[in-house]
Image 1 (cartoon, one colour):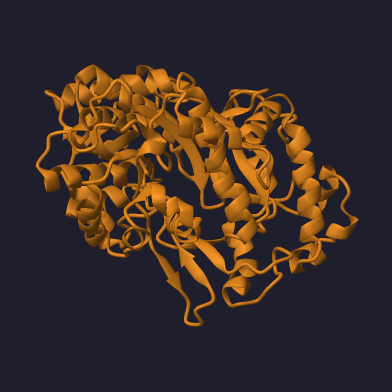
Image 2 (cartoon, one colour; image 1 turned 135 degrees about the vertical axis):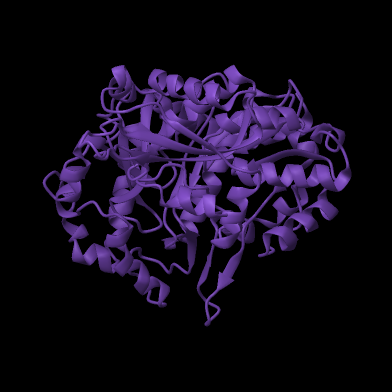
Length: 509
């Protein structure tokens, strides 16, 4: 074992021991954090309004505090943004992770307390890194640099409130020692203009020994291509021969995997998914052979889960008692509800997950509570779309840079006959298929294999006909992101839409 790895594992011994205990008894930690949250939240405005001082059990908490989405939490968050203290937590919260969401131009501002930054976000990353080194004791990542593509942070007019992408907040507040193992410098990583940032990273980082990088696949793909253009090299290993790890999250990775394999042609390259959202660090892939991510249960978050078929009843206040980790089951689509040391209380984050196993509790991200196409009863989740697209690309020997999907609804024709509905896919290929019509048919078939509801609606063209494929020129999605001011950071291409408005705007570009 390498010396630095041995030192790091010795330092991480208690953390690894805790992870092992959490696999067998996650509710031990969940009960501890529940009690800590209620105790500390009792001194906040929110805690006073909901009588936290009288809450002794999880069921009492569920009965007193309704589930809220961002719109319902916004009045409290807006008071924090105006400089008020002790609104949601018994401490001052001056930092907010700005999130544009997946399908809306409106920004959300997620409170990030000093405790949530250290215990939740940095704590989650430490767990992932400790597990990786434990599984790969010969790793070289500590003998090189971590490449970071950050966002930007903006102070308010008083200079006391800071908002920005989560990646930028993590960079801005990271310990000074991290600067020794990261590239580019903090100043460069926090440059606001994305194109200017890419140029600066190329100048500053290409001569360094980069061994790992992390972030959203699409933006990092742009960075790697820019670095190849800057250096004139044909693959990343010619620049960074010791590259070994990409820790990715934010969007599904499978459609991008062939592109990364092409840019980094190495059998020793590791790809690990982690689930680090603005609201908290929730899970990480602890075993490369298992696509499930291990839920982090001892870092300042108390979890509840809403079966998706109960979501409307919960939001209408008809159902208040929800499953915790003690009651969840594999294979069910759940919306995540969290309470955190950042001051979020029974907050519906908008993500859907499925448990691939319990004890240990491992999850995959199955979609969004509002990122699901269900125009014809097909219930297409983003995970289904990404899985089918990866299967079709593998079969047709092609690669996709970006895509989006929307339903085209049934209409009456001139003879008063009802037309069939279908899905319209707008796809930007990196390597196009030899026959786009054949690709469309294969993708449609792969969707029936990935989603039984889609299969039922497509059987015999019952209520849906084959999908329609529109191919877009390279760079179309990026042009749209630039027009919307969504370049870089935590911004993501909208994948599933309720109508064709987004696709139409792409076609105009």
